[in-house]
Amino acid sequence: MPVWPDGKRFAFTVFDDPDGQTLQDSHVVYGCLAELGFRTTKGVWPIGPYREGGSRSESCANPAYRQHVQELQSSGFEIGFHGAALNTSSRERTLAGLNAFREYFGSDPVTMSNHFDSEEGIYFGAHRVSGVRRWIYNAATLGKHVRRYNGHVPGHSNYWGDACQARIRYCRNFVFRGINTLSLCPFMPYHDAQRPLVHAWYASSEGANAALFLGTMSEPEQDRLEAEGGACIMYTHFGKGFCENGAINAEFRRLLRRLSCRKGWFVPVSTLLDYLVAQHGLHGLTSRERARLEWRWLREKTMRGSS
Image (cartoon, rainbow, N blue to C red):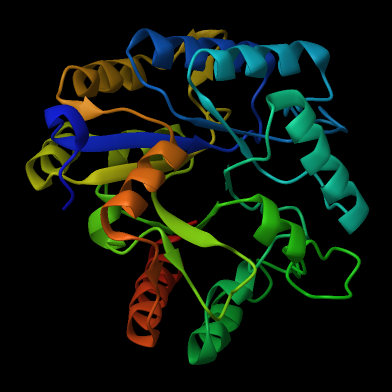
């Protein structure tokens, strides 16, 4: 495991996808994170529509939400990319979303995660795995995950892989059970020559909703993360169960407070990944390492429903 800066014993951060998150709930959750000394990464949709139909989800098309996110950035949080909008975007709309992101936040996004409901996902769905593992994925998810993801397919109306390669540094891929993401994917961030339109990939730990998040960062798991000197990049949606009637989940606050009292490095996702690259360079994934990652993720997904 790396030697962390300033004598820190471990690293912890979060990539928060915006699905289901209202402006009010975002104020509450990020107020709690800031108060306790955490600086994490908040994914956004730069353009509309927002709160479409029955959705609670906000985007930067709402000026009040955009101002809130800009204030978070000014206070040390990172803003990441979750696609241009909450539904499928053509190439033109994705490029417009990247341009809007740069206008609102001063530069292109450094980190991103694909959005499940958007068909411009890059190397997403079945394209996350290779060979026989793709066949197993398709068989295991038959009738459940019917979307086709085409962000990496040249000539398709959803293609934007060239822009991803040129404008974004890190893309999230596999999500694993367990708090020490770095022990589960010890060579992240990495480049995968079979998926060349992404500059570098990173893994994350399962915390898609409040119940999963709290399980992953339970007291024993926190102790293990510190003992192993590891790093956690938690994947979550802070719009899914972390607030109720404007109040923060009490167990979430308690566990965050406990973690904040430990000697951890609490920085945004790109800061952590840049540090790992500075320590050992950007890793080129080998065939054996690819198979190891894909089998581990596929087992978890098919057996326990990992994201």
